Image (tube, rainbow, N blue to C red; front, side):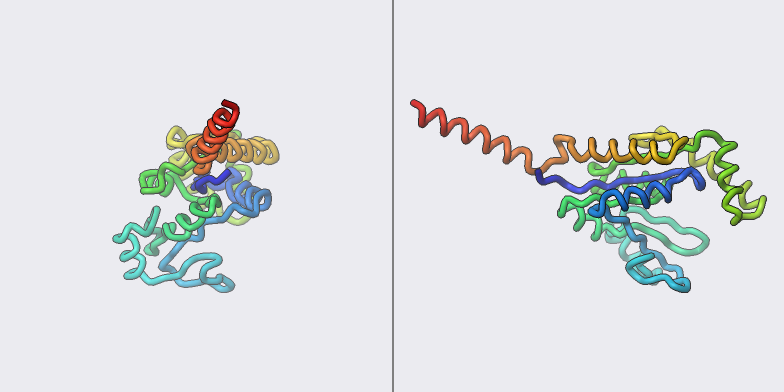
Length: 216
């Protein structure tokens, strides 16, 4: 049955498992596409335009925002980042879902956009703040002051949990992934998402009337 593609927003504080869950979802469904952000920062070594980011200049970026061609955008450390609208609309028409790795502010902008009706938003929580801090320390990537800043930011992000359609506690990665799959399968089957359902039902009714006419 034909359907419109979904815009899947996956958010969490750093260390709650969002990136791992996103990779698992992409492996599970090869029809799921990841939204490649546009940015005005310069490419880093090994980064490929169109794969890691769409690299552009600030004038072009701001023009796209003014034209409504960015579903969400923000300025981070002097550079602009945003989610281009065109590739998402193309995927929707093909019945393909797009996965967004954005924070609560980006999620708000996407929900408020012209494509907001197709949004499914999911927030991933850690089982505890102590476990979140343990995971951040286990990475071995950040100094103590950076971890403290991440924990403070996490508290702010978690305060927006009620703005999401679904909230999952990631106490077990496999179980959380299974719950994510259940959510996506159910959302894909919603009546209002199946664009071919109306014509199909109409064909059923027409066939029934034709059979009735032949029987009289």
